[in-house]
Length: 193
Image (cartoon, rainbow, N blue to C red):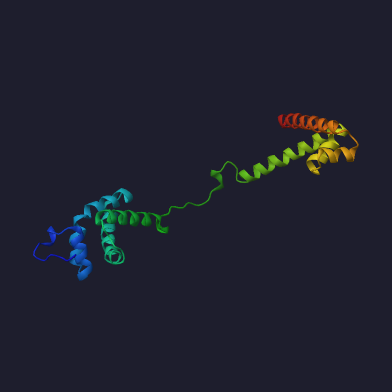
């Protein structure tokens, strides 16, 4: 595509002005093209910055970026591409370290400066284990032995039957009853806390 010289630059399409800029490396064509969309760029910047002066500065900075970025990219829809460029510029400015707001850590704003959520959770687990240990001691000997072999030593019903001499059905019954008794005991201890 060639730049038609007998028509004024104001009457050229975006693509023609873009091609002329790339061909002749003349910023005049780019400035004519950019002026068409300065209000759009300003509006985008104002939307993100919410400050007219900062937005005006951004409009100028984006024009400077255009000069280099257009040489690197093939652009079919200049208006859409410029909108995305302006939006990305604003977002990058807002994310820059000088725009991040930080405040000093103050433990007084927390419910407790000493106990964090994870420590609280670990404390609750520890308490539950202590309740479980205490409740294990309250079980009848056959239930306690069957529970320990099944859950702690990972033995099967058949293995427990061989080790203890209990019938297979008794082992199953001891485990089920022991588990139910442990649950009731732990719940009672937690209710007392």
